[in-house]
Length: 364
Ligand code: KG4
Ligand code: ZN
Image (cartoon, rainbow, N blue to C red; front, side, top):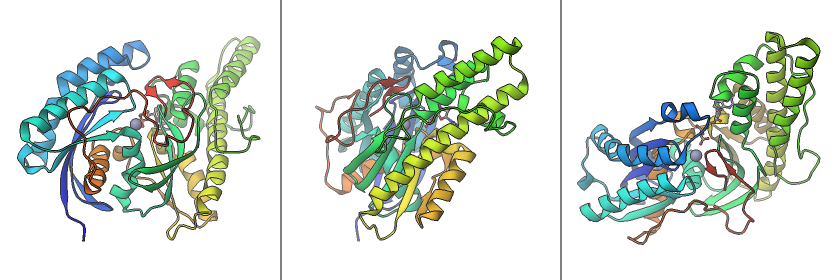
């Protein structure tokens, strides 16, 4: 039986300062503590994450998060086997804050250091929460990421496709802004959509006719803007029902694209003949009940297990970094004091990088 380890994880790649302690072995670990300090109020006035403000806040808060995570786990730094930190991809100043702190802690306490890819943290989360066995399919859908990953091992990922422009969460947020709804846009658009008719406006399903698993969401937002403007030109403004119908049409379009592309990704995945086939989702958009139900139905029809980790572990957190570090540590991976922060760090180096960089940093 594999050894048990205790790993301290640190995450600071976007606008959440986080620290966590995870204990166990690959495929059978538990979260002893998970502290997440969001920065939403610091960035609210700017309509997006301001990298310099984020980096400063991480530098000020991360050590406190680490102390709280150790306290909550009733441990000291002496009791952990290694320090794992997000080394990219993300907003460079924030990632640097985390890497510098982790180096200091590792050096000071004489502990091994592990540099974790933030996307690997998301992708390995279903191993932490549900003990999934390799290989499984992962759909990452958040405000910053959107990709299908074949997860074959702790350091073996194939990207089957992803967004070529906006991430779906970003599109939900922009839609909310266009319709005067509060941020974050996902939950407010979902609430409005529940009162609307998804058939009144026909929005496009971008790239649906194209083969493969790549997706595009920025045209959808432009189509929504046109629909909004034409109602305003005709009637002088939007009624509550107009707004609800536009939200319902938008959500239906995103859901249709995610389901159809998931169907294609599943077909490729099932060619591997996995013994326990599973599709896992992660990211804030996975909180959307309509999208979740549609994906669940797809999995049911394909006899594939559908796994959606609890939201606190789907959105950015440090438990996923500690867990990915645990798998790395067990496999003998170690970083040293030359570890650097990487703004871009694709999980699947064989693929060309995805276009663009979201409001929350690089997408791949
Ligand atoms: O994973 P996350 O917390 O952060 C990163 O983007 O890394 O995801 C946040 C995104 C936001 O864009 C938010 O609007 C979206 O997830 N979101 C949702 C819902 N809840 C959050 N999108 C659709 N429906 C929701 N219920
Ligand atoms: Zn993330």
